[in-house]
Length: 264
Image (cartoon, rainbow, N blue to C red; front, side):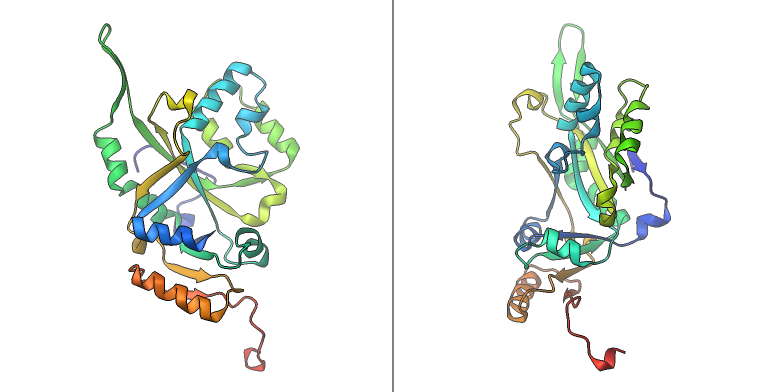
């Protein structure tokens, strides 16, 4: 893929399953619009996210990394198949769904997007000077990888190790670092660095999202409903997804089902 930056992940892991628990209504919107949505990374909730804009001591570099944040959009998945904590954390209404994919399929969905191709082939001119023929064009690059889970001391050491000045790859690398208490999430992240509207740096007009078109049946291999949803509601919502042309398997998680003697 053009301008793909990878972190902490090898070729074999690109074909492993990854999972994402999302609200049912959000899934319906994806199926209706054929769009996937990445969000600006400064919207992540963990106070230790966006390390370089928080812990960098140099004021000029901190401001520059903060500007990079405005152009960075990402999405978080998990290599963890299923556990009680993930359902309770990401499905508080007990009606969310878990979609399954692979890193490779997610990356292909971005690269095959007509919106991405348009940006790569016909970048817009964002600023141009007639006096010296200088100009700034729209641009986009891509990143993905596994999150590393570090202690607070290791995180501070990582920040201090950056003696290279402003460095986009070092900035990307920082997006794949998280504190040890979150290790159970086993995160995989992917995203885009999209230099688009320059005025957005100051005015922040946008919704902080980046939508791109996908073929959802090629990306989402299966959908699993929260194990706590009633069977009646599950069957009704499942029918809705089928009517929206989702062709792959749809299940309800059995993680809380009572065991039977036949299971042993």
